[in-house]
Image (tube, rainbow, N blue to C red; front, side, top):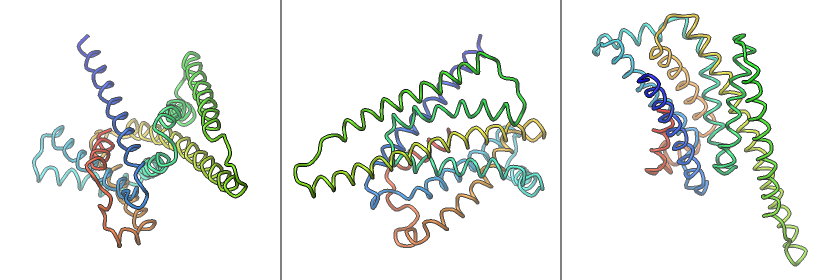
Length: 270
């Protein structure tokens, strides 16, 4: 009974962190693009915090001090097996970047509803990549979840179309109004596609990590250290390649507010 309570508490904490991260990220993304933080820097800082958390986890689980921690880092990072975490690290990095980009295009409710499809992606990835059996009841749950997300999206689209209805009085204003409506529809469609891509990345990365943990005897904190280290390198490379000029003008932490820092911290612990 006590283990069930602990498991329930951990799950509730995980859900709370996920929802808090979503709401904070959505609020941060609603700021004007000129004053908003650079998304790639948030992903990079999040991976840096994850790396530090992994180091703390290693120190706590292996009960080592600085010298032992350095030895564990050397053993974890200076090994050929590090290349095996490149795929999940890449998928997690892409997922995080796509999530921030999508939140700038869709509202938090639409994102959260659509993002539940990551559960379906996880089931499919586990079945196809790991060969894990899936019960009929679970397939039925995935089907109902997918159908529910589709129905909600259709309802939200109808509401959005109704909100966009009504035309301007003169011809020029009506033309500008149609252009604005078209841009909004395209932006929302791109955002939805981004959420779906994030769901796919989440499912594939989860299956890849599960396979790695089963095949090798490396502890979870050490494996997390490897993934976060590679993800940090990939996120930094993406940040420098896509936003170098903006970072040069405004600095790494431009547009950051207490809300943004809280978002990064919650994302790192989630």
